[in-house]
Amino acid sequence: MRKLLSSVLVVLAAACSSSKSDPVDEGGDEVGDDPAAPEDDVIDESAGEDALAVLKGEKPGVAFIVEYADGSDVDAVSEGLAADYTLTITSRYHDLVGGAFIAADQNVMEQVRLDPRVKSLAEDRIVAMSPGDAFDDQLAAFESEAAAAGEIDAESAAADKEYSIGDLTPQHRSTGWRLIHGERAIGDGAGTRVAVIDTGIDMFHPDLTAAVSDMGKDCVRRKNKTRFDFNGHGSHVSGIIAAQNNGFGMVGLAPATRIVPVRSLNSKGEGSVSSILCGVDYVLRRTDKIDVVNLSIGGTCGGDCEEFEELPHDRALRKLVGRGVTVVVAAGNEGIDADESDPAYIDEVITVSAYMDWNGALSSRDRYAHFSNFGPGVDIGAPGVRIMSTIPDGKYARWSGTSMATPFVTAAAAVLIGAGEVDTPDEVRSRLLDSAHTSYPGRGGDHPERLLQFADEGAGCGDAVCQGTETDESCPADCGCAASACASPAPYGCYCDTDCEASGDCCADADICPIM
Image (cartoon, rainbow, N blue to C red; front, side, top):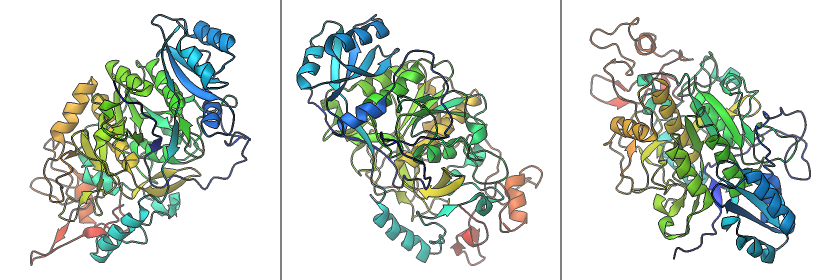
């Protein structure tokens, strides 16, 4: 028999707070002029705030999730159970065929478990943001080392510094974009949609407003529903994927894809498994419109997750992949084997670890981030340290975590799908792994996964130096950048390579080309 699992899931970023100051209601979430979420097409309470209050002990009761017998009428069974046992409905899962409830006490919940309409029952759990300073001290030490070597400007790379649009005009790419050879991308994600199950999105951010789909869901509030991000985590993830190519700020890896914000976590980065399930169920009912899901949450199982009882969200994610949606998840930030982290251990999803790089070029000083989970359960690695992206209030900031690595892979998947190169989740995985970098100087024995990189299709661009028959016209982003000696501020697309002196000594080009 599998063991029971009672760990808390966490959102996998190191810095996860916004400077936004909005009025707060009694439920702990902001109210005011934030835009309403699109109306859902089914009856659905989606009241994650109620379940969370019970799980935190702020309100009495027991929160739990129920799977109904096959073929059940979700609305009829949900309302029948609520009436028969005096339950509060917090979610209805029309595709997953189930619901989430609050009962008066444990005894009532156990009575529900025995009801013939119930196929399975699991207690709900908290999904919480990891502490903002969880690994900042260690990152600061590595940052000082890189600054001393001349690889970065430590002040400009500070995690607690916020940037405005004026600081990033003309627009910039991130170091992570350069490291994975984003210039080789065969498209921009046009024609695809990516669901970001997270804290929402700042749809008023100048770099995000055009990226937001007209779809979306709020699984947190019972009333006054919104897709707005009062935390920052969802906006940061979304910017890495789809910040717009508009002449200022940052440019995402797939700027033409459209983000479907699925708000499953509140302003504090808190939610429940039931609210995550609400988001997954929303996507399941729209698999004809959504191509990729980004899920930057995780939690430790206390051992090999395969030995524990499979939880509802694990089954739901497997079902989602089975329906043809590529699901990309974070490996986790505990520095342990990813097979001990949920949902990273799930074979069907693409699990992403975090890589640490300072200048956008592979070197012996590079390493996998010390906090990143690792092992055979990880499929691919991506940049995840001091990644610049969008946050609420039209700002930008550097955050770290496997939360930041995951959207690079999500965006790459959207690019491949949009270009018509792949169709199924298996094809996406194979294509990403086929082009990933398999050998690099900083690779460690605990991290056998490959590093995300776009395939070299023979274009010859990407080194900021005109080689062979390349000209400013044939490779303007690189040759034009090189010809202008990377004048500051750098032109769009400037990702200069390392400059080597006649003596053979190489130096980082950060002094002549602003590498983010």
